[in-house]
Image (cartoon, rainbow, N blue to C red):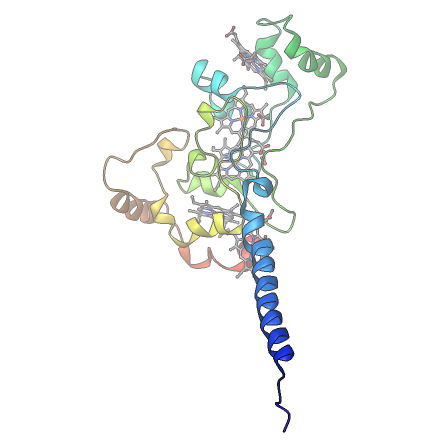
Length: 218
Ligand code: HEC
Ligand code: HEC
Ligand code: HEC
Ligand code: HEC
Ligand code: HEC
């Protein structure tokens, strides 16, 4: 009787299993790993701008507060990017002839807003709101990192769904007193568990719906 599987079949079978395995691996790499590399998420990659605005210089060097330029952050979903006239309150007096500030002067003179390149940009299908986070004791630093040390802005975290869920699952590990929202390099005086538990109560943080799809996809 002829064997059911000839050596050639065995050979093919081995290869197709190996090939199938390889295909699965390739797909997994594409689906799971590739989107998480900095190439796609742009984590840690400084974004170039029409004018090389330095947070490091203006925040740590000159001591200007976040709210001076991002005044929407406590009251609205958007922090917002400052209008050119905010820059001009100082730059009509200092560095008035600097070449690198020419686009700012042109923007001001022609009343055309600056086109800043976005560093963070969630898809329209995800809903985010700054004000609720600020109101419940989540500092800028928890999501944006050490902005005060950035010459050009970069993304500190990928801002994908898992970034949100990492905190929404255990918010108590990330809360700080509201007085420290704008602090960079914050360290709690007591263990974070103690501070976190207390602030959860004090600010009335409700962790129950934080992982529901409809919280962020409305
Ligand atoms: C003097 C004005 C000014 C101050 C003060 C300032 N910023 Fe900004 N910020 C800007 C401008 C202009 C941009 C847009 C250009 C850029 O991304 O660098 C920006 C961009 C950003 C972005 C990225 C926006 C995006 O495209 O996703 C974040 C995050 C940010 N600022 C956080 C902060 C924080 C936190 C502070 C306080 C520590 C702060 N900024 C203080 C002017 C300012
Ligand atoms: C409260 C005052 C103030 C505001 C508001 C301000 N700047 Fe400045 N900026 C300064 C001073 C002061 C210097 C540097 C002077 C020095 O160190 O020689 C400076 C320097 C700069 C420089 C030179 C490079 C550097 O950082 O050293 C750029 C570019 C610049 N600012 C862009 C901007 C832009 C864009 C805005 C608006 C989003 C802005 N600034 C808002 C005060 C300000
Ligand atoms: C819980 C995380 C989180 C915290 C806390 C947070 N941000 Fe953001 N921020 C984001 C996300 C996500 C985006 C992108 C929003 C989008 O693309 O619609 C963003 C965008 C921005 C932008 C771009 C303009 C805008 O409104 O979209 C600025 C400026 C900014 N944040 C400043 C701040 C400042 C200042 C603070 C602290 C007072 C802060 N953020 C706190 C997550 C956060
Ligand atoms: C570091 C912690 C932290 C991160 C990161 C974070 N959040 Fe939150 N988020 C909170 C806390 C705390 C609350 C307040 C919960 C409450 O009010 O009880 C909240 C509330 C919200 C709410 C309002 C929920 C409601 O009940 O109305 C939305 C929407 C939201 N977050 C979206 C996001 C998105 C989208 C991201 C990611 C881009 C994100 N959050 C990242 C901590 C975080
Ligand atoms: C805390 C906020 C939050 C919650 C809760 C949440 N998502 Fe998301 N989701 C996001 C953000 C942010 C993104 C990425 C947006 C972007 O890429 O710009 C995202 C992306 C997605 C995507 C696109 C694929 C991807 O991974 O980028 C799908 C599908 C999705 N969410 C489904 C869900 C489902 C189903 C649930 C409930 C089990 C859920 N989400 C709960 C914030 C959330």
